[in-house]
Structure formats: C-alpha cells, structure tokens
Length: 351
Image 1: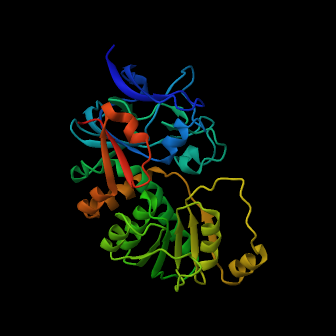
Image 2: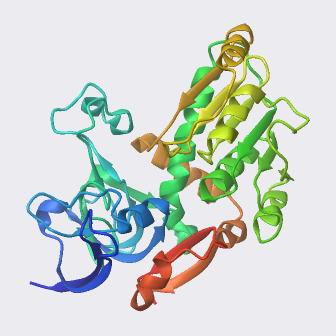
Image 3: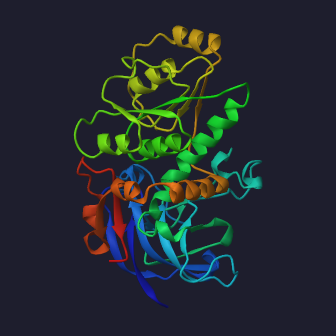
C-alpha cells in the first residue's frame, strides 16, 4: 500500500496537530476519482478543531485528516466525469444516511437531522493529504485559470448559496435591489462583496481594519470601505450579508435594512454574552417594513457550480491578493498559526 503525508489531529485533544508521514493512500471505496492534492485553504474552523473545540474522526479511527477547502488535480477517473489533469475541488458535506427529506434530494446543506458528515470536520477525512478520492457527484471541475486560487471555491460556495437564497426570497414581491452592505472583510465577506459587485450593486463593506490589504481589495471592486459602526452608516441597504458573527454587529445589521430588505446571517456567534437590546423595537421594524432575516450555512451542489462560475469571471489578480500566505506542507504549523494580519492562508502541497 502506498503511504502519503497528511495533516491530522486527534479530535477533542488540543494541540494534537501533526504531519503524519505514513497515512494510507485513500481506498477505492472512498470514490472512483483519484486526486493529487495541490493545496488546501486554512480557516477558523480548522483552528477551532486544532484547539479541541470540536471535530469527529471517521468511525473506527483515532485521528482526523484536516482540510475542507480543497484544490487538486485528477490522476484518474474511470467514470469519465473528469479527465486526468483536470482541476477539481471536493464538496465538503455528504448527505445523512437516513436520509432526511432534504438530503434525499441532494440538498445536504439543508439537512434536518444533523446526521450529515463533512470532510475534515465531522466523520470524514479531509483533503490535507497528498492524495484523496471523490465520488463523481461530489467532484467539482474547475476552470484551468483557477489553478492558483481554486481552493477559494469552498468559501465562495457559501456566499453563492447566501446570494441564491437572498434572490429567492426577493422574488416574493417586485424587488430591484441596488445597494448591498457586507459586514466583515474576511474571506467570506470579501467574496460576498465580489458576488454583490458582479450583480452590479452599489457595495459597501464594513470592517474594523484601517490598514493592511482589506481597504484596497474592497476599493478594487468599486465598493466603498467603512470603519464606523453599522448604526452610523448613512445608507439603507436592500441587502445585508452579515459575516462577523459579532452580536452587536448582528443586531445593528438587522435594524439597518431598507423596507422590504433582506438580511442574511453567515457569521456564527459564540455564546455567553448578553446585550441590552430593545427586541420590541426590532420586531416592530421587521414587521412594519416587511423585512426578512435568515441564516445560511454550507452549500448545495448547485452553489458549488455557481461559485465556480463566479470565480472564473472574477479578476484573477484580485483573487490571488486574497491569499496572504502560501505555506509549504513541510512548514505546516506556520499555516495554522494565526498572525492576525492574514486574509487567507493556503497550505501548499505542490511546492
């Protein structure tokens, strides 16, 4: 059996991160498509798993391979879905085995019973290994132009779903949105702003950073960068995409939308913090202005495809600028150590 390198943790055990040199090559049962890893993106989810906050190894295994923001090159595909040399990314979530009503129709992002699995997170090994396999329905082919940024497909799929659902909700009435507010200029926020700009909306992005690459990246989209509070902004956005999960920002965002406005929450808040807030005033505003607030997480297959189209249309130099560090696998610990200045860090298997 061929052995490969893999970045692994013992879920629930803080700081158990290591580069395993003798991880077994994926078995054919994992999928017909054999892929050579090129890179994986690093995100906060990985760092929380490394801290032991959550994560679940596959049944019968002690360790979990990290990595859910994948990019690879096809080595073999006997199904003919893809061809050797094609760029590919792997869908993260797999439907639950019951399946629930949503998973039964491949809407695993809307799973109702929580029994789904996720590569690199819950019950399935991830993509931070030199070789991995996919079933054809979970393999997303990429435009060759995305060879250096294709690992951005997973976070882009999250915001592609958000915009898909925003537009579905918008069709409840005559709706011609012109202004979007994005709160947070991390990878999700910047990609949400990209998709808003592709819809030719007036885009406003709010973040705390006054220095670094974020302001210039926002302006390069033709958008406006703000460092005030949400409440201080002099605008009424038709759409708000909230990407921070910070409770004060979330609440202000819910109050900021224009009449018939839609607020999509993508950031996950931590518990244990109370805020003095007038819930009655919020209720009154939502009701009287026909506003909608909804949460969105993960992505279905159609959102992965939409994300690929959005990235292929984007300025490739702008996408490359989102990646602030590319770290070789040999220095893997550096990739997972936050500097506070990064937008997106990539662990590079191709170096």
